[in-house]
Length: 152
Image (cartoon, rainbow, N blue to C red; front, side, top):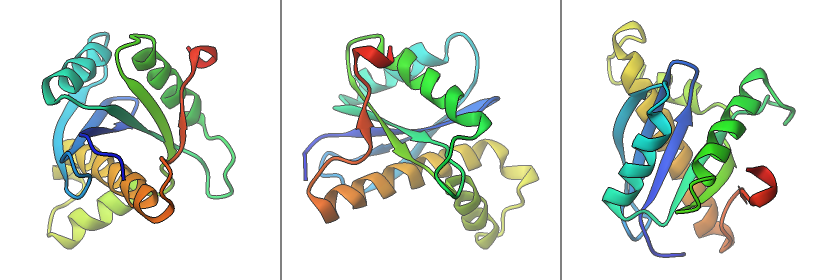
């Protein structure tokens, strides 16, 4: 398992959920929900710098059969914008059902979806990052794929 803090990112049309891991990759905590606007990319990059993150793990929304959804291109473009900074590694990972799981967790905790919209994005980002770290622990390989210059 690689050492270092990672940020998990759940990209939505209206909001972007952020989570962070500890440096050992054992614990993941919700961090922040950002409104989706022209300053969101810069805020994510500032958070990465503030926490000394080694990489950003961006959820890639795919349909259950693995095909692209209307949100796939949006998440890819957002990730490419982060990668264009050239300051941090950006990794895309499959995030199928992360928002559904986040809603389920909140419902189990007695929270309604209507009253938890901003928290849902953070919980989804937490699930994305937890799944990525678990995959790395199980396989010994970093999950997903790193964006390259061709993706920017």
